[in-house]
Length: 383
Image 1 (cartoon, rainbow, N blue to C red):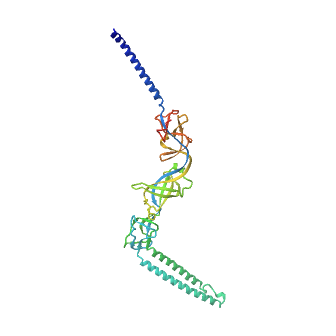
Image 2: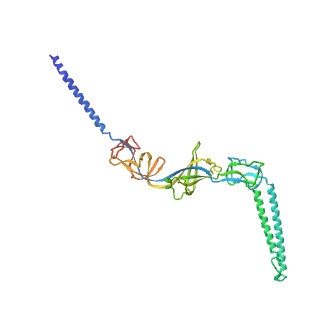
């Protein structure tokens, strides 16, 4: 009898147990859903921003060129008797050093002849002055009507003086020709080419070499239209940093020497010229900045007041996102003044202490409520 009673109660017990289990599972799921609902707001990192004065840096590119190039010619004719060891293509010669010499015998003889002619002319002038003085004394004893310029030997005296001046001029020419037998470097020079050798006869005016001035180098920089607005009123004298990148990076200091004052008709760009002293390190032992190198030049422009410097990835279609006081997303339209490297310089659309969103949710919406994580410390600043 008892066994039958237990068998009758067993289905009811299983049913009650099942209902209790389902109730417990449902309660647990509801609790989990309630807990999950608390963290549904997306997390964003923010950073407080403030305006600052920022000095623009202008970057331009150009080719390193010599300050001047000289096609060297012989000023006298003659046979080449010697030349400087560095008077070869690629050689460096300092200002005033003798590059090559021409045989001097003919020009020394011409100098001696000019000196002799001058001495004779001076002697003739002394004699003529003496005759003129004698004529002047004689004229005192004769009637004034008979005293003429010819009697006083004035024409002869003028001729003698002219002969002295002519002889002095010939002497200067002879001295110059003799000095030109030794051809010196007009400046610190790089020899680009040479077309003479010992024993060769060179004619007056014949081109014998090409030289580049290495006392200074210049880089002509095109300035784009969007950079022109940020140039100072006076650019001459501004310091510039010159960098030539290659197997070995060369960095030198330069100075803007002038604005060319014209706009290139092909590119519509303005142009300024940067000058670098001693590009080949001949006197300063600085690294060589060779002619023909392509260089990047940086120099400072105007100072922009009260601008915000923002990473470019945070600005999309002139819009950035901030978090308002209710911790909701708010889009801001900004005015981008200038792009500098990885940053934009923004003048309008933001306020000091705005909380700029640095990590946006996947689909940001205006008014979306978010959890804040400070960009400086993601692990401890959840709000």
